[in-house]
Image 1: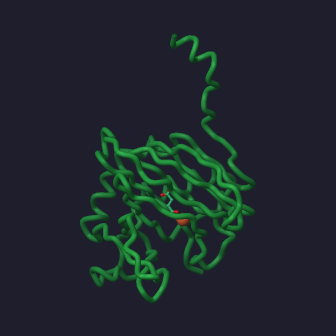
Image 2 (image 1 turned 45 degrees about the horizontal axis):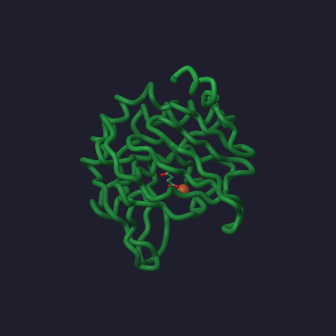
Length: 217
Ligand code: SIN
Ligand code: FE2
């Protein structure tokens, strides 16, 4: 039976081009897994996860924090990058070396060897949480790609086009997968479908996503 299935299902490629300038690197974060989880604990001890509010007044179902020189925040006044965590009044935690290493290595594999992130948004999804289609456009210069790391429970990544109504392709993202999009794909709409119930052996009932950007000039 297993042999039969093996014959029917082509093996998943380790690296898949998912658009012009966009790649899905399966398992690229796995070598960093242990270090990432230790670093994540340090970050969330200093700057805990919180549910931010959109400019329209909606509480986001995804809980967020940041590390690096700039952190992405939203409140009733709008979206922005801020050097200070508004909850603690302190600078965001420093970007850990393992975060930087992983982001730079993945970007380079996807064709962006000059990428040096100064911001990492840390997203926590619990079952039921979702992120609606949006563009990442609060960064200073769209010449830099986005590097997005998935940990914990699997999720469905929605990858659309340059306008909101464009067709959306769905990709299953699992623990350790990394998506990089830049160049002609930099402003593509993207989002995450509602997270399904489940338990991950390391992260429990959670999916953690690390989104690396070069936000500042
Ligand atoms: C994001 O767009 O900020 C997050 C994407 C993800 O969670 O995979
Ligand atoms: Fe995004």
